[in-house]
Length: 235
Figure 1 (tube, rainbow, N blue to C red):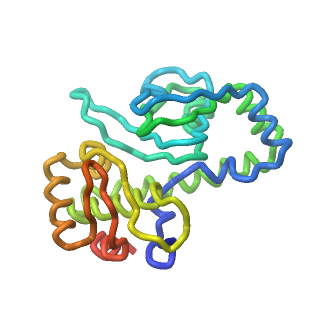
Figure 2 (spheres, one colour):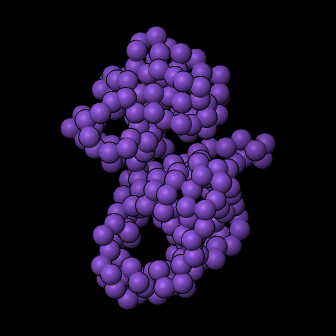
């Protein structure tokens, strides 16, 4: 079920899927001329913060998390990417090192596009360039919104919001079918919310008591997305 009539999800969920969606054949060929494809397991590190990029990762199937880690190894998850999205293009565009790390949340299929091919495609394809500019502009809006979360919202509100965003990532289609299963560890959810694992566990127990969610092992099943949206208290 789409929630756009209930909640401005686009203000909180940046994605690069639209860059690659329905590209004309000639534009796709520019990108795919030397693309290699490989199946990789859950937990595989696609790139590490501070290393030099060689190209772009195209998440053909699966999910991945982008994050930064502090000196103690604690992660702050910036973003969860879904099938069809590009990863690592910021570093290639800026000709700089990766500003964050990225690892797979599930077994995935990854296409690797050499950086030179990606930059050449941008020069030759006005459509690809426009899409990338639009995506970068949208990401700025999402990041600006996200910066206000930790200082201005409670753990309950932040957890509810992240579950709403994750529901969009894990739903199988736009069909009006609930519930939606989110297969994510409590540690990763806490790192998205910006709090300790035990706080997320406590809040999830409260949400279960309020019949907003249920759980099965590590899976979180969203039962009442409208209730979570109301609890998140965002317009």
